[in-house]
Length: 361
Image (cartoon, rainbow, N blue to C red; front, side):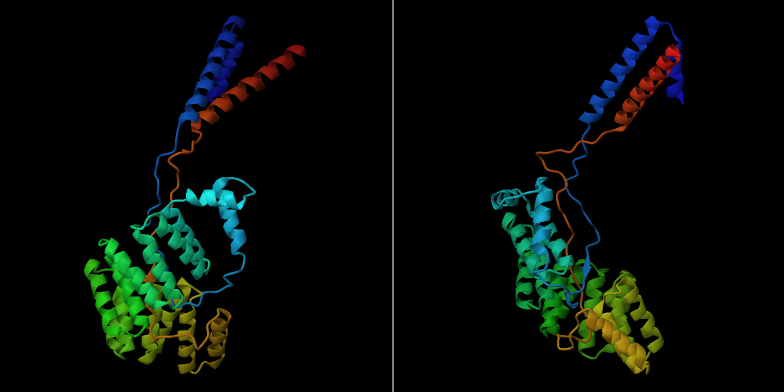
């Protein structure tokens, strides 16, 4: 409103002052535009997440790895270069300029889409760019767990532990998962204890200790450990699932269903929670829901011949540190000066047009 009043006062002034004032406004508007164009985004070069993605290595990965991956990959490369058509030479040039955190980011993306094999390719590229970058070593180990290649997974975690001491809570936990899966329970238990030495509130390690107890038929001890895991992180779907399974084994069906229900609320596609829900329904005599739960597990790709331990373990991907800004190309953003300048010029132009029409009339 103030802008329009000032403009009206200008238009009501003598002609010799009118054009002087308009010239000043135009100069001010141009100055605002130049200043706005010179402003750069803050150089925050990475995204740091304090909450790493919790992944369940036991869930059967869906989809065909050959699928539409090529289209998705080419689209990513086009976006990174801003061109619609890329030759293989251009793609090679792009790859040479992608840094280790970005390759790691691509690996995380394709893993979350269900392409565990392809994610390993990207984690390897990240490692080739920066061999001392711990994240892709850990994340590749988690991908190997999903592919049931536990010996390769263990080697990845050993290498990561050589690189980083500060990430010991995650790395010892994940190594313990690989050992648990091949039946080395005492070695796995030692790894989980080492993880908790690094972080006494680390929820995945508490859950995984409970899984070790469950594998030894120590259900009461397992139940206590799952409860500690949930106390540390109430969104730990794996701990809720395991607690529900143990309560079912103990015949505490009301509590068991509450826990399994919580796991499925957190992730309706959590296959092993549906497996345990089917077991629960069978034991309480609800055969209709038992059949329904089994159908869901099969729709999600569960095969009863797959390796299935008494309790699920939780391996964790590391945070995503993909670069946002390049050191060479810094993005610029328009500030409020752009809008103010454009609004002012449009207002002047509009009023001049109105006065011209009135003078003609």
